[in-house]
Length: 405
Image (tube, rainbow, N blue to C red):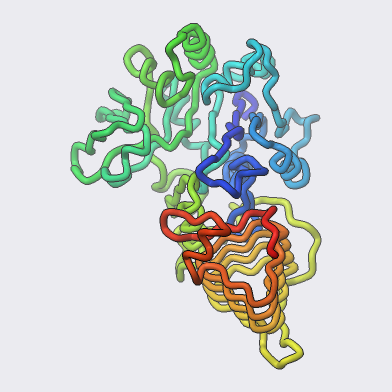
């Protein structure tokens, strides 16, 4: 696909994920024991044959850039393949990116240098698996100026999305960003057709739209709020239904915006269902990431005779459960659970150590935290609120720089 350039928007602050985003960009937040959120978008590109990729970064991008260097330096520039990190260049003035559309507008020179006929615009902070190749093929066949991936969502949730209406040929005839009263589907009053934030533009149409938008002092410079509504009336804009039988990926049709602590927590817990709603085990659609060289995970008994056990949990490389108990949890690399400690319904990031006889429940523990023996987290809400962040649904978050007394 040498005629196609992919742009991944990865500069989001992710304030609703704080404190997990206090020192990292949202796409760099760990997920599922061994991945980062951005791995899912980049894996989709890899398997879809999209190998000319610009990753636009901005907010606290060091962790993200390090991960891309270590895990995604896999393409050969000699063959015209690359994943290139692009921080703000300020080529259009002296300001940072001020919206999704502005981020690409400030890098129009890279589009012109690429000589691409088509531009795929993706977000780096969603969890899903999708083959973009059929969407790109249909974009070409219809002669569309813009194609938007969409999915059906309950109308009660549609106010969080861009909502569209289509004709019989899937041409988009109306679009509203986060409407207070979302339009229902013609054949189902309980659902709406929502944008997934996945766009394919014909390059000329994208450049024209961005240059026009940049001249508007009242614009938010956002694709959903500004660019798409203006293109609906005068350009050929089509919807592409997510899921179904198109492409090589198995049909799990799972998509999650993990933009809050509760949504991130729930998406991790989804992986522990008897049949996970997202298929991580399709052998020819493996989710790529960076993994350090660590020994296999193991359980062992403690000096007191307690056996280390885990039940219905994801256990990553280097994990040691020495006389502790883990249930319904996700453990990242190099986690240590010591004698008598219990971990339930929790997510532990890399290098966390849980001391003897600790009790952890319904919590997320950031990297490198060392929890002293007999500490309780997720047990007493009043005590937790005085020390940690607690989500709307009661998930307790311990930041990476928290120091226990």
